[in-house]
Image (cartoon, rainbow, N blue to C red):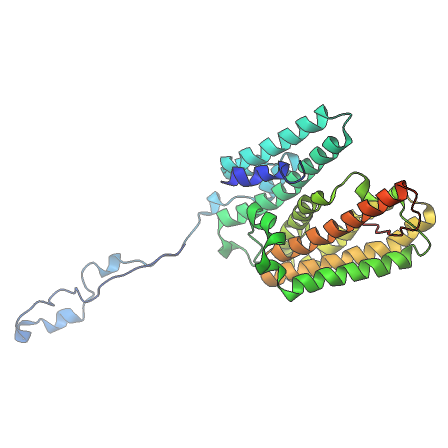
Length: 330
């Protein structure tokens, strides 16, 4: 099943333990004459009682898996971390998705759509694979060994989250999405008040709106699922939220490398802080709900809407409609 879930990467863009013991079955319960009872024997521990043990899941120290080993191996090649964990089914799905992405990327040297799609497949598999390796290491070791409750969402959970009413109807989701879009318009105008669409930082040249879902899954899984959880385990929840959000904002800085110096400075001063702020909100949602579903839903629809508007505006610009002024630089 996991393998089927993981192969969806390529279809997006192209213990409870219980014990019952009847303590009434004590020696002497069927005695017919109370006078024959041996009173001192009632003070003795019933035969066999010492054999009853109520145990909780325990783990031998030597059997605990090292999260840094699983994560490090997954960073080298998605799936290797799960080989270390002994989960060959998940490992096969991740390695297979990565290999297919590499193959398509090599074969489509002259096809920009194929190359960008395969590159996105590799990137998303890599980001999700790191989160999955860390998540499954903790599950293998037992939650009692950790202080921070991290998300445990599966790939199928995250894939369906943006389309489930149960997720979308939450005020924190639809309200967060509308608020993010409104702020995006405001900060973009503040950073680039005189600009129309700027091709040098328009990601929609190679990414269709359909790519919003794998991007949302990959980035949220890595930054909120893995990085925030690991730092929170080392420090505290807010330390994890803030640190992962700063890293999330910094990750978008290369978007401005091709801009003129003035626009690049504005991007760093205004756009990057906004992206960091959105990361803080997504991080808080993840901590609050112990799940990535809400943040993936917001991220996916936010990117999807902006990619769609950018594509429409780009087509208008190609046709000579310079009055089409949409400039979202994310």
